[in-house]
Length: 310
Ligand code: 13P
Ligand code: SF4
Image (cartoon, rainbow, N blue to C red; front, side, top):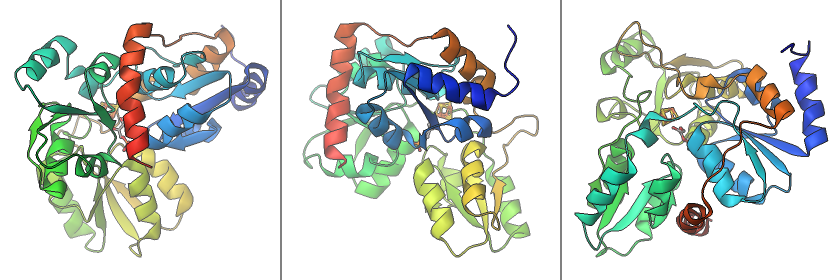
């Protein structure tokens, strides 16, 4: 299929025609971030999806994010440029195994990180993101035992911050577990004034070196507010596009992966391209759908999150 010469203009025209909104995560390709109406971290994007009056939501992110938009907007068409844009963390928590895990821990409240499938959300009591996990766990009565799923690194971080004992599902993200502590130390020696800023999905040996830990938006805001001129960024490097836009004179160094052959970009996020985004809008497919019963069950813990993180 022949593509238009100016994809940016063609996408803008389709946006008008469809009354569509383009919502993109910071880990998307810079071109996609530039064409989006809204960019943000997972909590901001969920809020955007919950409040939009557009007829069509084009979700430039991974499947669980688009699915979350559909959970909140059953009557809207939700498009995902590439349906194969999954998430290793969401995949690390299969529903059957999680049902058994839950059954093995009766009486526990289930707090699940938004990076999970609708099936897992439907089995959860409250959803959280990296920006509100600590706040949400702090609102749960002290004597209430809690299961935290699926990310063990965020879970461990929440345990440290709240002093609570959580039963952790042992999931993790392939991007955030790839950063090398040794290479971060080497970079710190080469750049003694650089601050290390890290996402809580990173492993403890990396988080140990962080001057600041937070969600993608929190890292972006911190890098702007800090007096430092140099930052070693331990999260998916897509966020550096916005950091550099806000602070063209600061230096942002992506934290290197352990294996020299590996790359620290999220392979799932990067499946979406500007071309696929255009084609999804033009053809109004691929669409994200889910069974109504599951949607309703997954909506309840999402609403609790939105209420508890005001
Ligand atoms: P946040 O943008 O909420 O920090 O999430 C990061 C992430 O891993 C998304 O996949
Ligand atoms: Fe999933 Fe990790 Fe990619 Fe985020 S960065 S979408 S958690 S695999």
